[in-house]
Image (cartoon, rainbow, N blue to C red; front, top):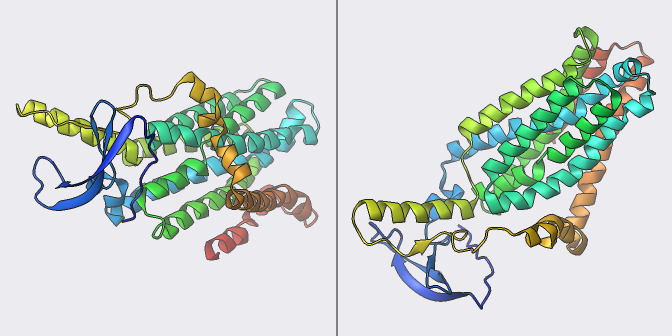
Length: 354
């Protein structure tokens, strides 16, 4: 397992090289690690002290069960982006706006989705993947309901904007892969999540084509988003545990103290990395680069992040050009809406092979 050490402020934390048991309650095997203490002398639990409680220690079966649910979650989020074009004509006719204006709902969702992904990721590092993904799914479902019941064009656009901004997306789901596998073994998990992401962009037009052709109302395009999102949230609630290492270390430290107290033993001086912080996150952190600007700072200062982001943006551009261009192209051959949707199956096959 690769060792990962967080940088420490020399003014408030100290390290010393120790040989101690794996578990203070029963361990007999010894492992060398850097002991960390804060200025009050509290021992801070680190990843190399208790690797057995981290996501790395999950069985492969459990890891892929988690990633499968995350893949469904990723399909759901990208389904929301790709099914909208099937409602454009009906939105245009219902509210007497041009088709170009109706497509604003697609554009604004994608733009704010890009920013939303980056804004959610730092919060997941502070408070854990599970609550952040649950909150994101809940908000997206609320805005899907808003779109389903929208009485006018403006409400629809606002709902799309809020849904895009509320989508946690790949920045959190790929971070979850890093929680489960080390950098040299995570390629299959990452490939699975990326495949699910592009799958969502092909499932959307396939389902949307049938809804456009056979559903009693164009609003079913948004009701389906809500149903799919609700199903995904329940799956995530039931089958995906917390995987963020700092949160798991907090829980393990708390468990050891509680068990010692219940047994009438001396409570061990062991604390999780977040427990020793005076305040998890301050308003200054929120408004400064610590939370909001950190992803964008990486984008501007790290060349590999910049070029990978540009490549990802270019590939997304190609995907959504396909989504928008299929209808006018295949209508020349008298394809119906559901037949145009089925034309995305070869695209999905290409994604699968790739």
